[in-house]
Amino acid sequence: MSVSPSIHREFFNLMCDDLIYQGMSRAVWTSSVAPDCVIKIEERSGYFQNVVEWETWQRVKDTPLARWFAPCRWISPNGSVLIMERTRPAGDAQYPDRMPAFLCDFKRRNYGMLADNLVCHDYGTNLLFEHGMTKRMIVARWSDSA
Image 1 (cartoon, rainbow, N blue to C red):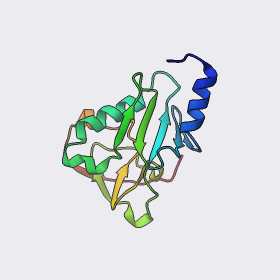
Image 2: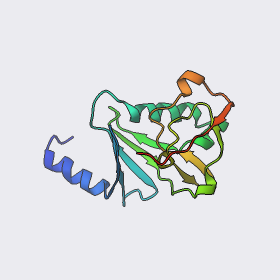
Image 3: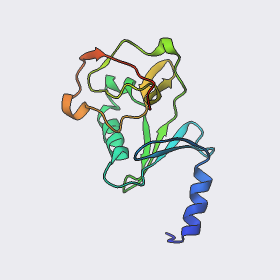
């Protein structure tokens, strides 16, 4: 494998098109190579949100709870790059009053539509490990804040 920064930059520019969101630990990019996905780049150390999303998806993907999560397709060996299925924006009427207890951070920008389902596409912080795969629902207080 190459250690050349110019080759790494070229590859990044090939894979990543437009920056669509930048949070406290990650940047999310579109990709013309994988137009049905987003590429999440986590450069800041110590957060491991890509790893949490990957591990969460691995636990729920073959369960009924998978319907609440945008699927992860690939993660780099050190977790700094994650490829996830891309959602589309949800309409106001598509945000339910109640959501699973293991989800949190009910900012509308953290959720989107896949097929006819509202899913979480930013679950790098979730309560699945604390609450387990519960069917318990809680009131969702949706927010538009940053």
